[in-house]
Image 1: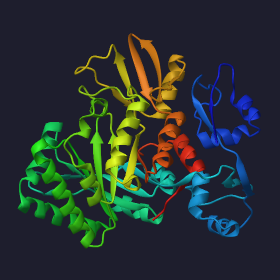
Image 2 (image 1 turned 120 degrees about the vertical axis):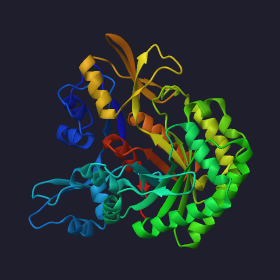
Image 3 (image 1 turned 90 degrees about the vertical axis):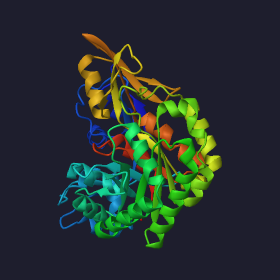
Length: 425
C-alpha cells in the first residue's frame, strides 16, 4: 500500500502510470468523484493486486471464493462495489488478494444510527467485527427508550457482524448526562431495574453484547461507578452475552489537560469488563476545541498511561472521521463547527481552489479559504487514519472504533484492509 499525495500538475492518468496500475481501478477503489479535477494535497491510496480473476459465465461469488480458498467477505472487502449488488457479470475483474503482508489481526467497530443508508451499510459491513447501534437512551429512573433497530441487526447478521447495543444517558446537555448517570449510581434499586431492562432488550432484539457510554463522573461517585460497572458486567455475562464495552468519551480538552488521569480507577474498571473504547468525539459545538489541534505526542502520553492501567488487549482506540468547518477567528465558548465528511471536504477544497495541507504534529489535514468570511476546514485523510491505526500493533491494542460509518470512507477501509486481518465473530 502506498498513500500518494496529489502534486501540482498531476492527473489521474499520470499517477496511474507512475505506479503501473490502471486509472480505472484507481478511480474505482478510491471512489474518486471528479477524476478530471484532482485537488492538490488530496490523498489516493494505491494498492497492488496479487491475484486477479476475470468473471466467467455462471460464476458466483461463493464459487469464486471456494475456488481460491478465501471467504466471500474477503472478496467483498477487496471489491466493495460488489457488496450491494445481486449479480456479478462475465468480463468483470475481481481482486482476490493484494500483495501487502498483514501486520496483525484487529477488531473493527463502526458506530451507526438505525437509519443509515442500506447501501452504505452493506458496503461497510464486510470490514466490521462489531456494529454499535447508536443509541438506546436511559433515564435517571433506569428506564430505556426503545429504537427501531430490528432491520439493521438482521442485515449485520447476514454479513457475520456482531451487533452491539449502545447505551447513553437521556440528556440535552453534558450536565443532564452527568446527573442522569449519577442518579442511577445513587440507588441499588434503580441499578437493578436498569440492568433488567437492558437484558430484556438484548434478548428480544438478538444483540451480541452491550456498550455503555461513560460521561464525566463526580469524584465522590467514581468508586460507585466502578462498582456499578462490575455489577452490570457480571449480570450481563451471567445471561450468556459475550462482550461488554465501556466507552470513555473524552474531549480533546480533557486529553490536553490530563483530567482523565485523575480519580477513576482505570485498572479496576479494566478488570471488570471485556473491552474499553477510548473515543474523542470532538463535537463541533460552542464549548468544543476544534478537531485536529491536539498533538500526536499528547495522544501517545494518554495511551501510555491508559495501557499501564488496563490490559492493552482490552483497549479499542477511537478514530473519529468527521471533520469540521470553523469560521475564523476561533472564539472559545462562541465558535461552532459544522460537520463535514472527507468527500465533502475535498469537494469544498476543489470548489474554492484551496490546496490541502497536512500537519505532521497533529496528523490532521486542513485548508483555509475566504468566502465573505475566513474559514478553516479540519479533517482526516488516509495519512491520518494510517497513523492512528498503526498505534494498534505498536501498543498491542485490540482494535479500532470508527465514529461514524454513516457515510462510506473508501480510503480508510483500503488502509485497514490492505494491512490488517479483520476479525469476524
